[in-house]
Image (tube, rainbow, N blue to C red; front, side, top):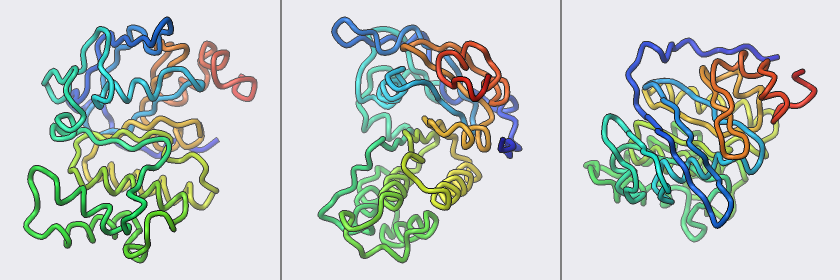
Amino acid sequence: MLKNSVATNAAEHKTLLKVVNLTKSFGGVTAVKNVSFEVKEGGIFGLIGPNGSGKTTLFNLISGYIKPDSGRVIFDGEDITGMSPHKICQKGIARTFQIPQPFSNLTVFQSVLAAVAFRRNRPMDPQKETFQILSFCGLAEKANLPCNKITTVDKKFVEIARALATKPKLLLLDEALAGLNPSELTEALELIKRINMMGITIIMVEHIIKAIIKVCEHVIVLASGEKIAEGAPLEIISNERVIKAYLGAAYA
């Protein structure tokens, strides 16, 4: 079992995100049901659960891609419930998607430059800032490659770079580690930790439990659209309800 390497104590920081009784149904199916939790500023938080448990729907509700049937999303002290995605992005929430969505007709550099250039507080030198972001994400040598010619891991890193270009306070990572080999996984986790060290709070949806244990300080568990547990990673993996609903016999 990998050891939790997080040194930050989120309890010492203010609440950055507060989700209050969020509910969302599609037809007769309730995807998210009365989910509430708080995220402290400065930490890395995990959101786990079986496929179809409501994790991505919850991200969509927080980031404005869909509107809740009821409940509230409070970000940095402001009620952002029902705001459009671009307004929420301007407030300081950025996200990635399960399937990377780069601009396939653009180069890596152009794809990230677009996010930098159209930001509300556009920098004096967008190209310089773009290259700095690419260097930070390990993409500088691939800046001139078309996005449709790069590897899966690089597409994921481009997604993260574009999110960072918006200068977020909170970054939502939706299965950013999925499909990576062990060396790529290590590289991605190091990037996530570097991002967090910049002061950016992170919530990551992930199925790789060893990664959650290694980098997260607090974990929220969903099953059938409901929050069934939350707590420190080592508490979560020994929680009988979580083992039964998600983790299985390997953690029993």
